[in-house]
Image (cartoon, rainbow, N blue to C red; front, side):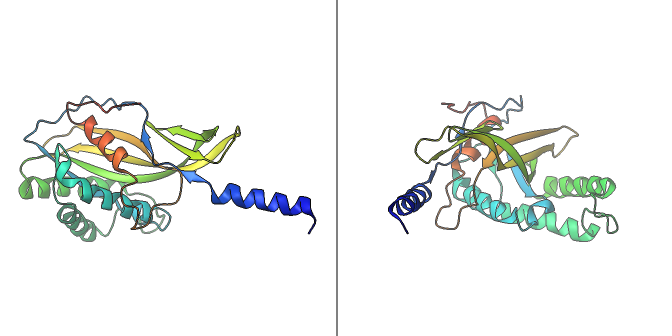
Length: 225
């Protein structure tokens, strides 16, 4: 190997080895007009779409973040384990949400699932105002100069001088907010991640994302930088 090739190889290794991904952080406020009173609570249910192998690691990491933040969240989040246990029972009763022939979402089953879930939550947790039905979507976002901004979130990569512009894969948290004792619903989206999901040693990557989402439903606005 000549000296030029050696230097090029070292430069590539340094660039890859020194790459730093920063945690996602708030970029813009989410307007929902859904403030929740302090005495009211919310429930979080993962929809079965998040069981896909490419999505499951993000579901697990987000759940870990929610658990570590649970005592600080306002409005109060009721037990994730209990609410998802209730949801799984309803899904088993219905045989899932997808058509067994074409594999598509069965809207009638989904409507029945939602009605039964809301009724069960109203009995188990009378103070729950809304249930957050959560999915995680894969999509593309524009990468510009080491930064990606999408769905009220930005995330940066430190790789040295980088003026490239292209589209990259990102994950977006999509919440269908459903009123438990009413018919109101609203969809809320917030960016989650542009890299592989964190392992157990890094369970706080989504803290700012979750707190930003939660402030949407409180009377406090997120400190957007």
